[in-house]
Image 1 (cartoon, rainbow, N blue to C red):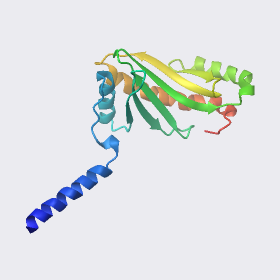
Image 2 (image 1 turned 90 degrees about the horizontal axis):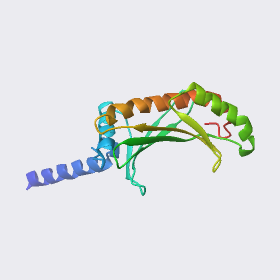
Image 3 (image 1 turned 90 degrees about the vertical axis):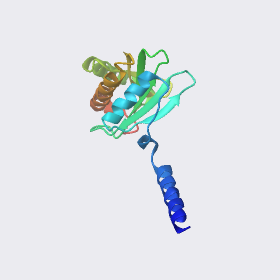
Length: 173
């Protein structure tokens, strides 16, 4: 009887510990092979991410965040296409700007777009923010390596470009 109670208590403790583990610590099985290749590569690099599943547009979404040297938070949002041939990456809210100062912002946007060839920065006049974006062709075989390399490129370029855009940031990221 004591032995059975000990086993039951041990099982209960293990279940409690498993329930407290963050989702990133559990293996994620993505629906698309390109997304899975990215997640596997992220796991191999011991990088944290949040898998969001498939959205209403049929894109599988992953979020990865870093603290930068110039920005307090750089949140990359990844959209993997159901055709398994492309990925779209966005960093929303690089800065929040005063909509009436858009004409002063444009030369700085042009400068960062000229300086950093792999990431495009644009002003979104819907919410007066600047977004960084990248779209890339991938295959299920190349997605892991390509996307991890692209992750570091997007994060580094966004963090560096912020120094040029910071004078227009009304939120002080």
